[in-house]
Amino acid sequence: MIRDKRTVFIVSLIFLISFGAFAQKSKSQLQKEKQESLKKIEETARILTETGKQKKNSLGELAALNQRVRQQESLIKSIQNEISLLNSDINQKSEIISALEDDLTNLKKEYATMLFSSQKASGKLNKLMFIFSSTSFDQLLMRLKYMEQYSAARKDQAEVITRVQSILSDQVKETQNIKDEKSALLSDQLKENHQLASLKQKQNTLVKSLEKQEKQLKTELEQTRKAVAKLDKLISDIIKEELARAAREAEASKNTKKVEAAVAMSATFEGNKTKFSWPASGFISQKFGRQNHPVLKRIVLQNDGINIQTKQNEKVKAIFEGEVRAVAFIPSIGNSVIISHGDYFTVYSGLKDVLVNKGQKVNTNQEIGQVLTNADGISELRFQIRKNTAPVDPEQWLKN
Image (cartoon, rainbow, N blue to C red; front, side, top):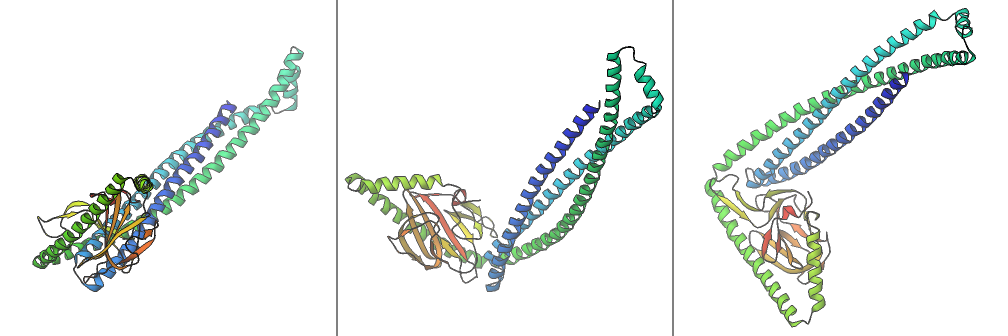
């Protein structure tokens, strides 16, 4: 029975250590997520401040505020997940404490019974009578061995009780520390909820203000659409020209090595899907494809790439090595750089300064220019990835 108790104790100890390590890992992941959320919030808050300085009540300010609300909701969710983990940890430890208390009670009862039995046979005379009343030498040896084992058993039982008491004490302390940590998190959550309510109020106020500027917004939207149409036509024409040139070279078989290099680069580009670094820091202010206008009802926007709203003078970097196929300027959008990567092309538009030239080879993460800040104070990069002439969603190619 003592051996069984010792086995249960060891198994329980292993469980405690394993559970603690697992919980710590999960807690560590949640804390890392929370720190990343706080870092993104700081960056978006800076973008929001910069955008609001130039012109109040702009679409750029709304985009930054929308992103800020999403990030605040994400932070609160992260705190809630951490609180849930702590609740689970507290419940688990409460169960362990309860089980240890039961074990301790049973162990003490057993030990008391052993002590009582020991006291009954404590006298030297009783022990000697017990030993020498043996009917054979073998029985004598067996009784001597029994007395030794009985003494050892009492010692083991006392040690087990001491260990369980020590573990129980540690578990109580840890549980109290977790409860204190949970209390601090609940306080943080309350503060962040107030912050979220304030942000949503600003968001609603801004939307109502922009709705009153419907005529102006429609005029600006039409101007942007015309500029984007020019940009898309320019991109398509340049890519078609590049593809036609490559096809002529392949047909003539004069540049076999060049064709093979382009094929290899295309394969490498595809192999890095989801691994590319962002061309600029910030957040996606307009996604790929068709989306509803953030303010104007029944207006749908079409985007062949993504828009990344960022800080003023943000550096723009090539996401992969390649060759600059064109540098062009479109009024109201700014400069654009088109880089070929075999069958793939990346397009960086909305630059004020360009640091590369047509025909130049560029490396991964090489700076190619700086983002333009428009009259509304919005610093926004228009980024596209195309396979031949077909646009693909850049968000699916960049790192999360």
